[in-house]
Length: 265
Image 1 (cartoon, rainbow, N blue to C red):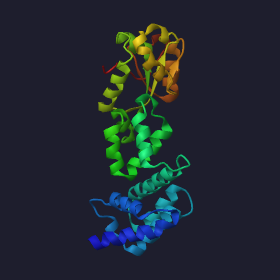
Image 2: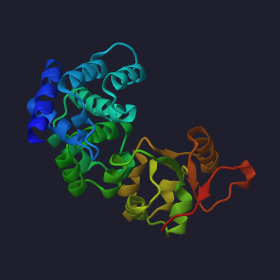
Image 3: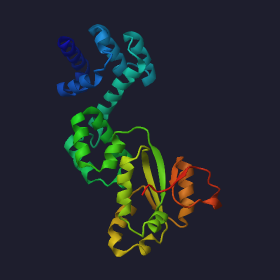
Image 4: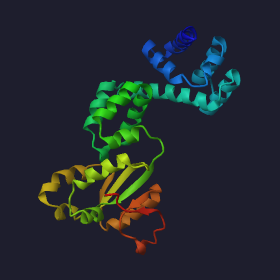
């Protein structure tokens, strides 16, 4: 069996090295491709080479390449889609931030990132890196906010809009409870992302001085808004993003029929 695995690794390296792949990259891919059914082991090296060339470098859109590679190799389309997803993730890492981000730099960024500032471009880079390396994924779980790790390792998410002032009044104007809220999100079965927060414009004047530095940091996020009346923007965002609303208000005056949930803390 080990001889077959070495042959597969060498075959993959030969096919992919023209795109700049190195041996360690191919070894990571070979590990990911291992599956309980041993699908790749059933394909001869010649057929595998032909199918992978068609999958990675063939003409036409992704679905067409997957279809042709599946016909050539008898490998299931979803299995091939997973291989292609790995390939695309690898290219994304190579292209990001000029466009090469070393894993260490990504981890440093993730460590400093607050959960309300997990923007889409960073999330894409983190997901691609986590797909490429289990070591990266494990390190991320040790240093990043638990909510960030949760979102990176999840694919099915629901947008959420939080009624910021309503949350503060329900929690005695304690801004630090937003930090606790994101910790709770990390443990919830339902995965919320992006999380939009909408405050009334007067929010800076109603919180105690002790909470204003943290509030300013939250308000600096592109996912956070200050608007009066806040309810108007909350409902508008919920409708635009098809998002869940987290509030104890019922928004009857807006005829809101979308999903509304209460705070988990």
